[in-house]
Every structure is written in C-alpha cells, then in structure tokens.
Length: 205
Image (cartoon, rainbow, N blue to C red; front, side, top):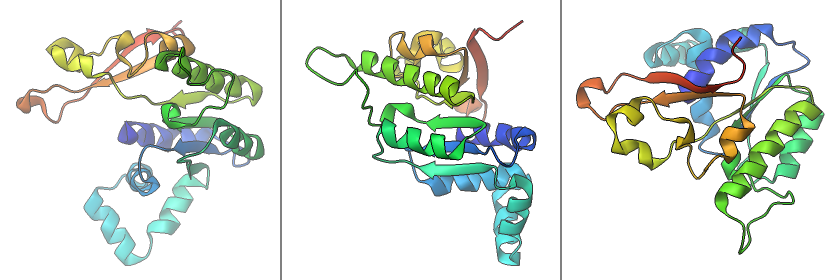
C-alpha cells in the first residue's frame, strides 16, 4: 500500500498548491521506509539507481525539485487525535493521509471501556477523520490492514470484500466514500501479482 500511495502522489503533488501541502501521518512503521518509496516514485528510480543518486550527491536536490516540499511525512507514533488535529489546523493541508488511523490514540467521546467494542471505537475514529476533512476542507485517505479471514479463499485473497477490513464490522466502511482494495494470491506462481478492486464507490457517475 505504501508503494501504491507514493506512485499516485507523484502525480497528485503537481496539482497541489505549495501553500497547502499533503500531510502523511505515519504511525505504522519507520518514516524512512515511506521516504525511500517516495524517492523512488517521484524520481522514477529503481533502488540501485536511487543509491547511485545518493552517491553522486544529487538525490535530495532532485527529490526536492520533484516534490516541491508539498509532501510532508509526519511520524505520529503514540500521538493522540488532539495532537493530530493541531498539526492539521496549523498546516492547512490540501490532502491528508492516515497510515493508520487505527493506531492513533483516540480521545473522543467513544473510548475503550467494558461495554465498548473495538469496531465501535474504530467507527468513531474514522468518522472523526471524515469530519476533519470537512472542517479543514481537504480530502482524507485512510489505510487499513485486511482481515485474516480473506486467507480462507483464493477469491477473497485477490478480491477482498467490503467487510474484510481488520477489526471492523461496518464502521470503517460506513465512513468511506471510496474503498480501494489491494489483494495478493498465496499461489507462489502469482507472487508478483497484485489485484486492485473497488468494492465500494459512491463517487462513480
């Protein structure tokens, strides 16, 4: 999903005004991994070509030229939703990517308790992100892992159904206007294949 997002952003960034950057909130892994994929996507390089550019001392200048400082990766491990919103308010972004909302410490009215299910918490978090987009006038992209249930069938491995988002019954799905699924077969002969589908699309004409 990181490679898919950075490849799309390499085109999207050209449509973004410099004063309204793209914010990528990362709390799943090391931000350097995203940055490396971003270098490759924006510069159209293989990893070997990327290393050569670094050796030649031109990597950062070429990336800055391609990016224009419009894509900003923000590591937000252990952040609360209040802290995330403060950054959004200050930056006035044109697009916000959450990778992943599930790991943000949510401080809204819906909190973990004896009678609160995980899917209810996640539904509140995804609705919170949707409302941020309306409040600060930007679209929102949120990434999610797929449920382990999809491994039970070759069809669902390649084409995960709408309900197959991790730890969610209908909560994440209800907050989304468009869902893009990336599937992968367990067949060793298809190791390099990816299957892209849109099980939900309220934006289609």
